[in-house]
Image (cartoon, rainbow, N blue to C red; front, side, top):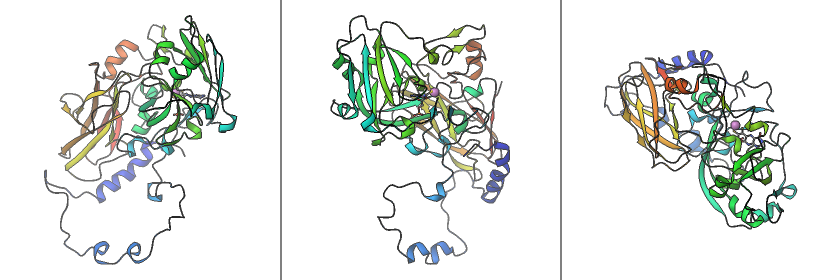
Length: 423
Ligand code: MTE
Ligand code: CO
């Protein structure tokens, strides 16, 4: 399934907007008495007349068919093939904070491999007292940890550096998922092997052809990094690294090595492909920043947005979105409907969880006029999400990675929306 350019869907949105366009005076109640009898109420419907499916019909359930468009999508022009590729989480259609595994974005450098538990081996070698190899069953015998964390590809929003480009939060901000992980702390496994005093880094790699090798400073490895084997309560999906992947809270997705097969303790970073020619940020003067691991605070309004038109007239409108920071918990999200001139503090659905996604809501009374809708996240370090202009002043426009600038959606009177930038 591929992404639809916004222009071809805009007419559909417009029609839906007109059909449902019952204008409500501001503050009017949303429920109302029907003048004519409603057959959905007065007639016995098939679902009340006949039995539904038996419990043996769906041993493992998929979403109901009416939700068939809540799926991962890719951007065909972005990657040459679907093997070394990426697809995007339909964040515009989700609510709450946990990403269902079935639609959580995938990023592979050489495709999603199928690695059975009996064939799984995890080696720890290099500057350790005892080089070790763990089987999958070995991993399950170590004390476990649990935590909810976001995984954001450093390239998320990367296509927007040069200007507003993709029409939909799925495409501009959908290289992120947020799941509950269970696994073993990496420090537990490293302690089993015994890190030598000269050990300052770990080099982690996967079992796939790309191996996606990355260097991680030992301090981080000994802090909150996990070797995870469960996500959202169940085994990792194949595409997310079954049977075990690295979880590196708050740090760029590229470090979250899937199908994890080896951890080498080293005294220096390896300077692999993924941390030299890729995943570095080239500045305006041509110099590249390296080791930019942490994902800075960021947010986006997921609805209304280009894929989620407003389908009613003036009156109560739920504005909602996501905020996250790799430096800790989100403490505040502000929303602007006038392109950043005035800001209103949104309601956080629950207090921010460190290095996890936070849901925000703004219960807005829409006057039916155009809006330039923005959100701005603040994290517990006091860091404030920058405007795109402020970001470009410092970082130039040569970058691909780490674009956390404020996003603007132009909401039109008919309820449709477009990705724009305001200068
Ligand atoms: N690990 C391996 N072994 N191979 C890969 O191609 N891609 C990385 C990382 N780990 C990759 C990998 C990148 S760039 C990202 S953003 C995350 O996995 C994506 O994780 P996901 O596929 O669960 O979304
Ligand atoms: Co990535």
